[in-house]
Length: 367
Image (cartoon, rainbow, N blue to C red; front, side):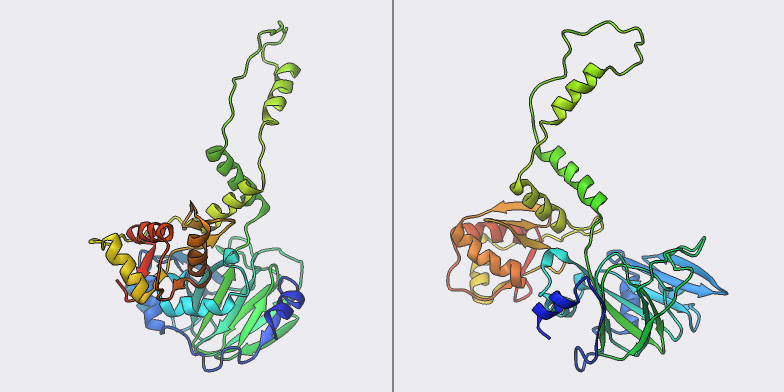
């Protein structure tokens, strides 16, 4: 199946089961390595335990002690943004480049012993569920009933009615569009790799765009009322005040450039828990660019780089560049790396060096 056929017939329309989607795939890390990551302060992790019909949720960082004391069954460990820690996870995400980078959220990895799961639920985003270690039974439903279990720490469907189900083995993959009810239950010790795509709500987009306008929109003038009339009820907001305020608010205007800049900044902005490590002893600009020409350069695993019309958005910041610089940096934005080159445009070199000293890039030789 070509990406074009998938996008036309399945994307945000209906589920798709792909047997042996990645032949030979058994995962990218072990159970112990995932547990170690869940104890890291830089990682976002969750532990879901079901006991006696009740659900318990704990957010990380977790401790090795509590992980060692877990029961033999009916629990799940989930770690977000694994692509921020493993180059192999970023490599896995490159297989999904038929979806624009602006839509990609992260790679989440979950581990569960036999019987483990997080209950039937809806997701508001598209997801590819790729099976690694072991096997998992997936049940899905197109139901609209979204009543949730009362007092549960997760949004677990109260009346889940599965319409289809399959057992996924290593390398199998299930695509689910948004708002498609699903329930995954481990048939044995298993790990699932969830490639999730960002889908902000209309409310979130509007409120964040208003924040963008607040920071980037300026207008002159002050509210004034030289012809103020006496009113018998001083507490009343007058019609004249409302008219003038409506007139002032009509000054709020934006165009396609504002929308492009907003989306670039908003969609490349790092999550609040993400920090970048600047090189302690950065190379000089000349030595760094010589390394780039000899070895190439790649994005730091946590960096998000999007492109616009003659500009780039790196981790929430805007960079306007000329055509020569744009061509080189577009390769970095599309492929997350630049292979060795014989020449680097002066403007592109300045931008690359700025990103390097900010901790957004690393040389392909690991420095």
